[in-house]
Image (cartoon, rainbow, N blue to C red):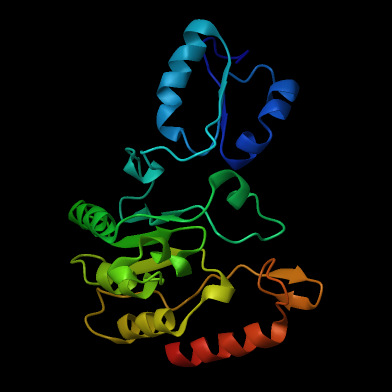
Amino acid sequence: KDEREGRLLVVGGCAAQKDRDLVRKKAPWVDVVLGTHNVDRVLDLLDHAEAWGPITEILDEPGETMAADLPSRRDASHSAWVTIQTGCNNTCTFCIVPSVRGGEISRRPGDIIREVERLAADGVTEVTLLGQNVNTYGRDLAIDGRRRPISADLLRRVGEVDGVRRIRFTSPHPADMKEDVAAAMAEKALGEPFEQRIRKDLFAPLGMDGAGFGAPGAPGATAQPFGHRSEEHTSELQ
């Protein structure tokens, strides 16, 4: 701000929501402090700060607008991130997300597919599906009257969009990695045409618990059950 007159500073996200008072105390020169539920308000808050001075606005509950509904700029013309879910129902000891973002909220499948179709029409060939726990996507939607994850169904539908050549997803929770997801990955990875392909590599966050190496923060998680499950899924993808 000293180097460029008129520059405004914004601190936002999970940590800003949790430590709003600490940010103000240690960095009083910050113009806007906002949390995870009001990203759509950032321009209004910047206008306020420019006219009236620093402002802190934290909403404890999600609003009607999701971050995925906002305009975005891509750094790479061939690749795009697509939010499918916000929040998380787990309580991993090291993770701040559930306490500030709240429980899982899944986007409607139709909205996601339409976004992917628009991206593909714009030249995007690789999409990464984003969620705090993508393996439980759709559980809160209770489609067909059942509270069950439909992440495997979503992978298949995204894989059927013309022009999409590669699909990634992150982050999956090891405890919720199910056989149907591995099967969907294997179907698209081994099937034809090549242009509709789900990546065979899998990003799985791991952590430590009192019993040893296992799923992050999960009570009683150990290397043995997770290792067994990993072997099962790996065999399906080979």
